Amino acid sequence: MHIYEPKEFEIPELPGISSESVKQHIGLYEGYVKNFNALSKLIAELATSDWEKNELAIAELTRRRSFEFDGMRLHEYYFAQFEGGSTALTTNGSLAKIFEKEYGRGGGFETVMKKIGSIRGPGWAILYFDPQSKELLTSFVGEQHQGHFATLPIILALDVWEHAFILDYGALGKGKYIDAFFKNLNWNVIEKRFALLQ
Image (cartoon, rainbow, N blue to C red; front, top):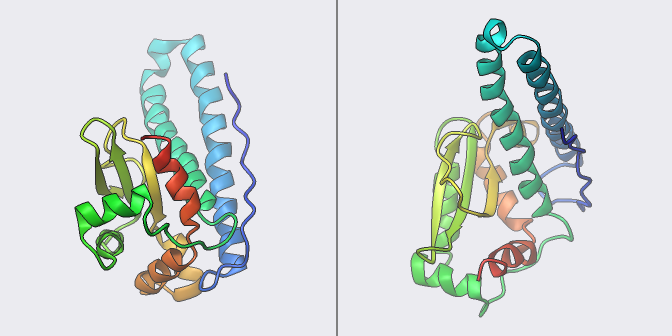
């Protein structure tokens, strides 16, 4: 069984997102890693001891394990987007061109993502790319496991659980946090994700 280790992220000061918020958020991410490992171990132990006796427990733990894994992996996408500091989207790059084609000029993509991120409830606003249709798809993923486009690679992940913004902006500050998120993005990281799929 593979044991996952929390990744370390080199995140600079983020205007609008406090260092304490980042610190606590990373602690939550590390909890997902720890919980995934613990659940994997427990499921293996229960399955090898007496499957029939432990079947209901295994089923519930298995459902929970995917929740922990998605929390781990989505946060890895999320934090990596801040490493190296804020950079602008390359104006004539391939990602900017597909944004213009699919969302129009003048920040149409960002507007769409902000609207998706503002949907009520805990979750993620995610940008995917479908290599088959060669188009971008956006989704609100409830919590972190409901609403994914199965198999599609993630280009950008925006965490909109309250833990991402409540320390800095309070329970009603999601919109201000989303604005800060976009101001702090390292678009080079996101463009590299997209380039690998071309």
